[in-house]
Structures are given as C-alpha cells and as structure tokens.
Image (tube, rainbow, N blue to C red; front, side):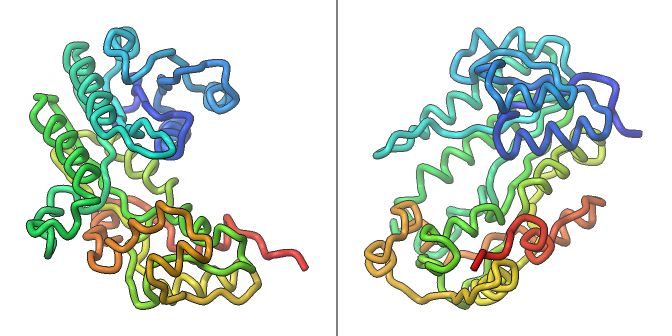
Length: 304
C-alpha cells in the first residue's frame, strides 16, 4: 500500500529535482512541505499554488531545520554546493546534507530519500583513479559518497538513494551559441551517455516516498535512455530543424570555440560510462522518458 497521508518534506523545491519531486507527490495527493529560503519568491509561490505548504529554512542553518522536519514522515534531500565564479564549496554541500540528516533523525523522520549522482560508490574503481588521472573529479564524487554513507548509517527505518545520470536538460547547453552555432563539447561522437529527464527523477523519488518498503535500501542508478553523442546530435537536429553534428574537439579547441569552462569536466564521460540503465527503474515500475520523447516535448524548431 502506498504511504500518502502524511507530510513529506521536499528540499530544493524551487529547483529542478526538488521541484519535480514536489510536483509528482502533489499529483499523487501526497501532502508536501516545501523547504524554501524565500517564501515570497516566484518559484516558491508557484509550488505553493500547486498545494504545497511552504516552510522557511536554510540547509546551512541547522537550527532552522528543526521546525521544518517537525511532524513529517519522510524527507527528499538534494543539495547544490555553494559556488562562486572560481570555486565550488563541497565542504558546504556536505555540511548541508549532514545538517538535514541530523535534523531528520532527531525529529523522528522515518524515511529519507537522497539524490546523488550516477557512479557514486564505484568511482574509485575507475581506471586511472588511484593514479590521480581524475583528481579534478575527486571532491565532487567523494562528497557525494560521504553524503550517501551518512544517509545509510543514520538509522532511518527506510532509506533510498537515487543516482541520476546525465540530465537531458543539460544537453542543449552544449550549444552555448544556439542551435545554429553547433555543439561545442569535448564529448566524442562515439561517447555513450546514460541520460535522464529531470521529471523522471521526481517520478522516481515520488515512487520511493510512496512505497517505502519496496524501495528500502535501494540505490537506484536512474536513466531513461542510453545514446551516443552522434545519436544525440541526430535527435537535436530533428527537434531544432537545423543540422547538428557531434564534433571531435580537444579541450583547448572547444574552449577557443566558446565552450564554457565547466564543459572541460565532460572528458570524464569519454572514458567512463555511467552505470545507470533504464532497466533498473523499469524493474521497479517507474515510467521513463526517452531522449527523443523529451526533445519532441521540450525543444522547438529554430525560426527562419
């Protein structure tokens, strides 16, 4: 039987994953308390208009989280590390997650669902990791690993970790000059990406929150599709109505052509195929979105 009559606290409710989770829960008539820093913001008001209760709190402020978790059955947890133009505060991300885990446990929360990223827990076994080849990725993955271990070890009656693959929503960002400017990326034409639509993260989280027994101790490698960059380019071409090709560029060439600096991190994907697969979610009864379906719904043909 689904658990749907008690409040679920959703963090990140004004963002992508938390917003998708809140909407999926509300659509299933599950009461949602949305944790927001500014209840007066437009995104917060939009979630409230759908039926969510807003609570003002900040994951970086442990004291603010006590009232937020009071009376809730379950928590959906997602963090975004504090960032500046030149740095990412991974210690701050870990502190946010630890604050929430501690508050939830102290508040008697019975179920905790954490969003992570595909491959966490397996990353240290990747070829070249021990030799330092992927040192630039260490803080990112090690922080996610530490958060996952905190959730596992907290003693919640029910817990789940969702590990989403590469967001479909991020693929158009590989064309920073627009569709006619083409893809500017270090991802190679034959690089295969495990892909997930953000709404499917929300659907998966809502399933876990509604069926806590079925999803207890599940670490779900979540993907809705598996596509090469060549296939991705073909799908983008069809959706945008302009030719799109998958380039083969070095980091230097891509940066010189206008690729954002964060794109250099995609070299990891050329060497490491994320373990997320559609079959894992399908076996749990979670509906998924293919990349072609997502593109048809979300992208519009280029004018002219």
